[in-house]
Length: 235
Image (cartoon, rainbow, N blue to C red):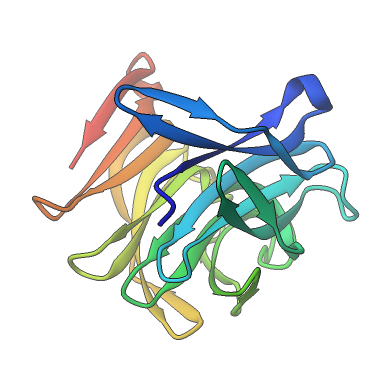
């Protein structure tokens, strides 16, 4: 709504603190405001989602120095001019990776992550949770497991606005890192899943997903480790 872009990153020159910066596009160039630290700790991974209903930026990150270590924390950001400010953090779980998307039909934030804590029945698990933004804070429903073996390592979530479904593509760590995708349905503050589908039978990593609103298709891009690590895409 402000006509800006937001980038979040781990600042290696500043003790790997989590930082956000607001960019303004003009023609074919972009200029940036001053970076804002939103986590003064060793930050391992991040996901950023724009909530178009509340006009807020939601950032999920893994804090390696938090107690317990590698806690997944979520904050809501508000853009003003060329700067951004954040509300208080909500701690979800301990995690290894995180991805996110916005469900525009239900006006919810969906996070998918590799759980190392509460969601993990044994070892690591692929888990998802529905978040609701209110002002500068966010609350969550019950965390749901969709894969019982480190399921979202190198994973990515996207929203299919044609079918009003969430799609999570992931590397199934307890099955030779096979590339799989699963469809989630949001209802209120919960999410349920169908059965996973294999999109790459070989070892898969570095997955990214996008939704094509013209053709109503999901595109999955990934590094095919089983095929000389070639960059590959599939519809």
